[in-house]
Length: 133
Image 1: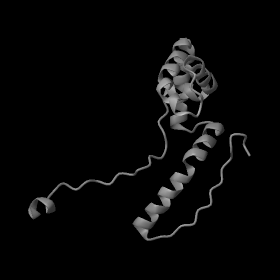
Image 2 (image 1 turned 180 degrees about the vertical axis):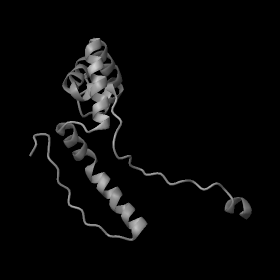
Image 3 (image 1 turned 45 degrees about the vertical axis):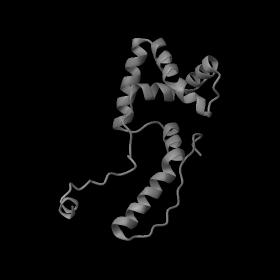
Image 4 (image 1 turned 90 degrees about the vertical axis):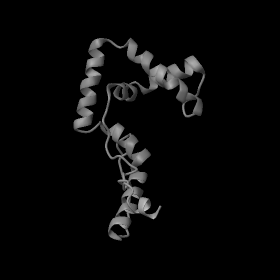
């Protein structure tokens, strides 16, 4: 029993947070047509944006919005996704990500610095909001 415990395969530690994102055309369309998707969900199901009932209607609403787009618009979304993945998204999208994930990223980073280096950190976060302020 001790031999098995000492000789078991070691699990490699993975980061809990994945920094960066690989954009897909579907994600780009959702970001660019967010209001239309949310309006369609509310019309078809009655679920309000921000409520928990919206999740089960999200996929079908995005699929229907994508089905209404022309081939040219889908190709443009594909190019935009490639551009956002390789470079960076526009400032409005960056501000949304910063608001949602910025504090978690900094907390994870400071915990890793403590764990790896024994270093205490003080972090002050600041970013531009969706209005650029």
